[in-house]
Amino acid sequence: MQQLRSNRSQGTPDYEDIALLAERVRRGERRALAKALSLLESTRASDAPRQHALLRVLAIPARPTMRIGITGSAGAGKSTLIEALGLHAACEGHRVAVLATDPAAPSSGGSILGDKLRMTALANHPNAFIRPSSNRGRGDALDTHVRERIIACEAAGYDVIIVETVGAGQADTAIADAVDLVILATLPNAGDDIQALKRGVMECADVVVVTKADLDRAAARRAVQHIRSGRALLRNRDGDWHVRVLATSSASGEGITELWMLCQEFFAEGRRPIIEARRRQQRMRWFDESLHTHLIAVLRRRASAHLDRIADAVAEGAILPPIAAATIVNHLETP
Ligand SMILES: Nc1nc2c(ncn2[C@@H]2O[C@H](COP(=O)(O)OP(=O)(O)OP(=O)(O)O)[C@@H](O)[C@H]2O)c(=O)[nH]1
Ligand SMILES: [Mg+2]
Image (cartoon, rainbow, N blue to C red):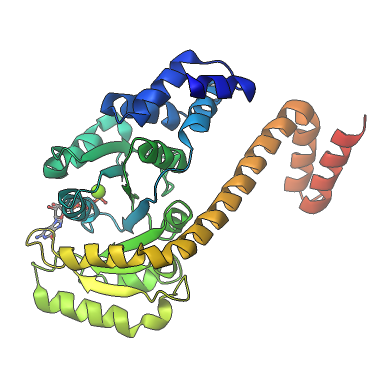
């Protein structure tokens, strides 16, 4: 109720059901969290006011959280790795939320079932919550409204949030804008893959994991060496953190404890200011992005015919893009 009152004073639409939903999310009710996530996943413009009303209440800073992104090419073993790592964390008493993304078309429904099946042990753990969702075939790496959904999971008391991306190569760098720690999963024989990725996702990885080490230990060792020797490709995103490379097997459990220890090292108390600085930059980019989206929407509403005419002229090379943009804005500013 307190929340509801403070919302009224901020001029937020009075959505009593949203206030109630937020309260239930904060109490840690799984069904409420699932409902909140469904609302936040919506891309319908008409849902935006309700999404914002919910986020206003949920986005109150909670205790420190670990936002971990796992990326890598299709079939690299991301989901299985998340289950192994997530179980490790959950067994240590952490509350683990997984936002899994699958590239498959939503119509089949197969992807959702697939991830649920792959993570059964974690899904059944009382400390874990798994939200499988398809990226609706949009083809971009980051699922819809992932940042908002992370906030909801944190409000529900989850302190380890693991986000899986579709493994669309370079586009996966988008994950670095939503999480603190980026783990890149790669197969032992993915030498070419690594070269291909070097300018993209490799540059934003904090930890590189060579997966499925049980299948061929020698190959996994070679891959680790190969990646380490190509260290020049790996960029240390923060001065005090150098990129780590290790081999894991979700089947045998090899390397999973080490990986979790690396996560803990990354999120050590002393590194909190660095992580906060990274989140600050992310918030600023998110703000820029949102502003851009909203301004474009306003432009389309207020100057749509003019905008279309100028866009055609730009396409034909009759007017240069920066001049066209200035023309449109000037047109708006003229009373
Ligand atoms: N032997 C072995 N097989 C594994 C291991 N990890 C994953 N697999 C298998 O590899 C296949 C793909 O694993 P996933 O975890 O679904 O891979 P993914 O990267 O999430 O795949 P997408 O989400 O479809 O891109 C599955 O059949 C897993 O059982 C491992 O450590 N050892
Ligand atoms: Mg997967």
